[in-house]
Amino acid sequence: MSKKLIVVVGAGPGVGNNVAKKFGDNNFRVVLVSRNENALDQYVKELRSEGIETYAVAADAARPASLTAAFEQIKKKYGTTDVLVYNAAVLKGGQPTSLTAESLLSHYQVDVASALHSALQVIPEQVAQNMGTILFTGGGFALQPMAVYASVSIGKAALRALAFTLAEELKPQGVFVGTVTIAGNVAPNTHFAPELIAEKYWELYKKREEHEIVYS
Image 1 (cartoon, helix red, strand yellow):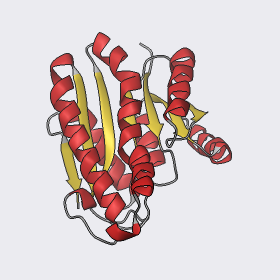
Image 2 (spheres, one colour; image 1 turned 30 degrees about the vertical axis):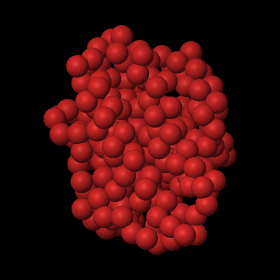
Image 3 (cartoon, rainbow, N blue to C red; image 1 turned 90 degrees about the horizontal axis):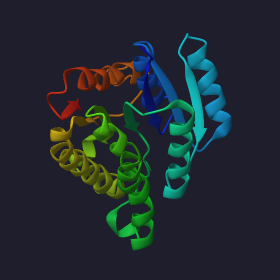
Image 4 (cartoon, one colour; image 1 turned 45 degrees about the vertical axis):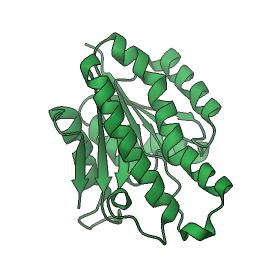
């Protein structure tokens, strides 16, 4: 039986790569997606050094066409995406009145719209095989918004709504959708260490019961 494939959009040394490692340690092949090709090369080396079959595809979450091309490449080279993790976000502070319509939309593209766009790239095949998982990286600002992080609060609230509505639509078709709502600052050697948070993604994937884990 061939290994299943996890694709992590928004690869990085925090949550993204630790989720990739958790699934990789459980016999998944890994594809990391990020816009920084040099960083991707390093991430691939790190995971491969731990015996995880890892590949990388560069794409910019701010540009849907870039994501479309990336997923076409992934499908052609590596096959069906069994698990999609969308971990990209614009984590930038600012009061609501510091935003413009244009800046809010640019953040929303990365935080929410491209999450949906990425999901739409894998849903048809997952539905066809009546099996698949889509996981989003949420944030505590979805539950307790803060003025000083207005755009993040808006984005995470919308992403949470996207996760729940997609979950409702796709559950009858065998596709599980969930979100890990991280209610704190991710930092090594703390309760919010990325490897501890990564365990919750695996828990959602394995149990397929609740559609949200609030990590607080």
